[in-house]
Length: 511
Image (cartoon, rainbow, N blue to C red; front, side, top):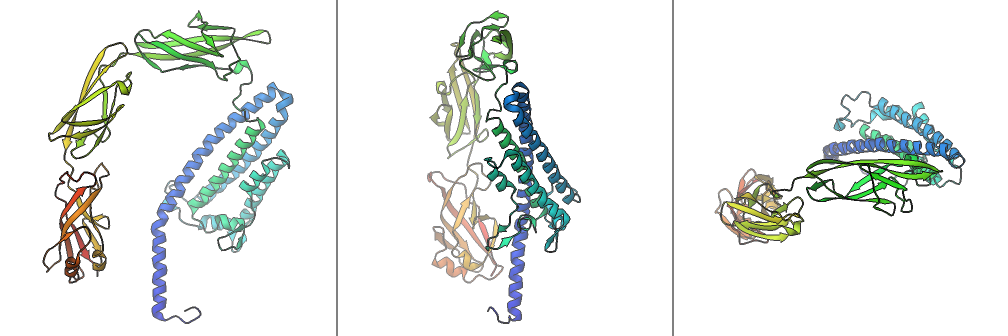
């Protein structure tokens, strides 16, 4: 009826439709607002982490400039300029965030940050920009241009800078050209705008990281001289049984197979087990308790000895006397189900465990088993193993056996009392489930009974109302409660297990 005059009734229908759409938006908006808030939190955490890494990179480049001025001094000057521009731009964005959220009492209550006025009033005045809006655009452009000028027109980062900090007009889904500031910020909830600004801060940090990494040739972690090397003790494990050998490696922070030390001192004694630039550890573990590994690796640099100190420790623990057994679904197992059980013993490989059960049957291997309980009340897991020392250990763990709890009838996936039109009920499959059960158990409904007020109870085989049930249902009135009971259901994949009586589901007829 485009171009025609709408009737009062049609206007009312249209208004109700708009109200309905608005209500849907309101119901969904809280989740969306929270999602923006959580995204902002993650971006903030990432910005802090990236800042720390960037500072380390700047420090590394400054050190390189001091050690190798001819190669790195100019690169360091460029990095200092980029760091200053980035710091200024980042702080500017943070100031905007503080101003537009100044009246927000709880900064973590994202669902309350649904208003658009804060940023709209800050950046926009009618169809034009405020002085703050113009300043914001200029700030972005200045940062892009200044960094580009430092790197040069031929820099591979030119396209990256344009992509991350472009303020060109955008094309919306209707193909209409929209000013960048309008497209990105106008009419957005406060939390969305805060998130966008935080993302821009992330772009700044990532830009710094990319550029400095490139200035260093992708070798930010490379040591500058032997004075800055650190000895690293890498043990095969950090705890040993009495009588075992301590095994592992001692390497330099920058591993180089061609870099062979002149001398190694380990725990105040000379040590000669060296291979491919690594000091191979092969020592008796010692007694139970904590033990240190200390020493130094000596190299010659420019005719002078350079000592690289290393230090670490390990613990020797007693041999275990019992296994560690855990039930993946609590210390209760359910009859009629394959209950996952994990079995392990410190110091013993999973495939060397002898695992049996009393009160059921067990399948599986290598520490992962499925327990099928028997008819009793308790299942006992027994574990036997032989330690590397030859000592035999045994252990057991009791598990209570419980029946699967009573299932509940359902319609439309809902339990208890369900409201729906009788026309929908007639074609709705009746289901059964265990909504609060720890296992994701799938059930199949085989039959059920239908009781419509004032009508004879009807038996239905299958999941959908038959003709007789639909006939009875047709006589139901609005407000009547149709009861679905005596639901016969079985476990998919284990139909032989007899479930407890399935609880009924009631359907209140709405029309």
